[in-house]
Amino acid sequence: MQSDHASAARNCQECLESDGVGRRVVEYRKTGVIFVQGDPADSVAYIQEGSVKLSVLSPTGREAVIAMLGPGDFFGEGCLAQPFRRERATAIADSTILFVEKDQMANLLHNDLPLSDRFIAHILAKSISIEEDLVDQLFNGIEKRLARKLLLLAKHGTRDHPQKVLPKVSQETLAEMVGATRSRINFFMNKFKRSGLIEYKDGLRINSSLLTAVVQDQ
Image 1: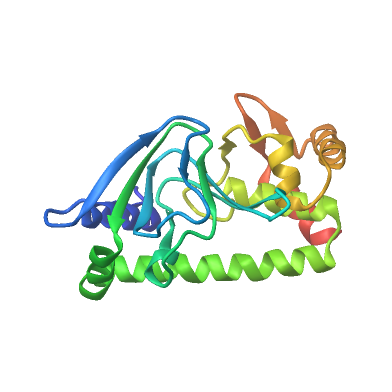
Image 2: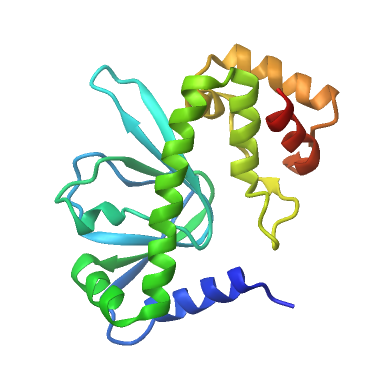
């Protein structure tokens, strides 16, 4: 039976695709740039298919990955409150992105309660994730931070995703997300593999129960 989460995602997409909504659908190849910092913020984006990386670039050229998103996720919602993009969005797999003009999105959120509820849930989840990332950086070591990031990327804890094979994520990207060097990420990924916490089979497969034990017991 289809989960409530999947049903909500379907209803959300149907609303965004309804007649009269100012929208466009764009397909991006892997590594394609969707927008960059400083671009005009004129639309909210919704991932129909694929995966997207959000990152910020410092004045010195250092990149920090702030989110990895998948089908059913919104991004670029800052356009509702600011005129320019504050992050860079890049496709990390072949992706199909639906863009809704910000005035249209504001009208939809005002008039469509289910869409508004889902959008608010997205904003709250993002806010909580940012707070948890800050706590993670302040109090946890690299191994625990890496385990948490892998769990988040695999979206464990949702009923419709009890186990998931991750899209190919480089160790350089993981290092940017965790705040560590690539060599340290490589060390702990090998440790997780030897311990049976992860395996490389048609992608990166995460063992949720064992990784959860790492997060709880360290």
